[in-house]
Image 1 (spheres, rainbow, N blue to C red):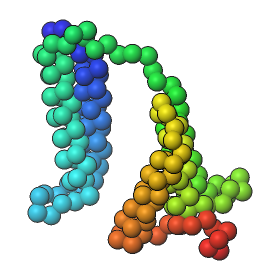
Image 2: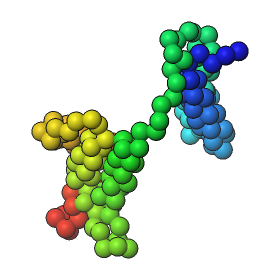
Image 3: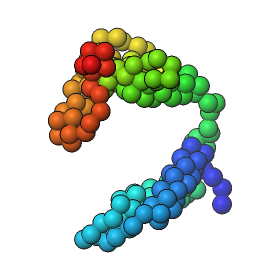
Image 4: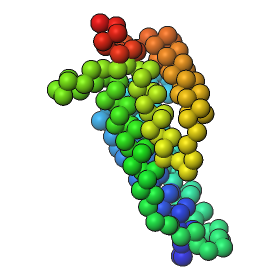
Length: 162
């Protein structure tokens, strides 16, 4: 059978591999059952669902005709770099690097750093829009993680809160 869409085929393959990996990893935990779910239940179900979606996408890539075969283009290095860098900077800003003398800057500063750096991955950069997005994300994250879930991690820079 011929691959009619390379993009869909390899996307489906990625979904399947990740789904199988999640499901396999979940077997290290107690699965439980629907009424009494164990810690492995959700990752197992998520893995199975992800693998099923991948299988469907692969099937579709083999059956549905496309104009040009939807070839995979060259790697997008700029977005890849900025997205990975923004996640690394987020982690460093959130908890700091005491070994190198970098203090924890907290959740709010980390979200602003993440948002501004990841916005550089796009074709155009509008600082005002990114600032609004960062503010909405910071407020939403604060409400979700600190207020509602009551998670304990730094919100503000350590040199301000002590």
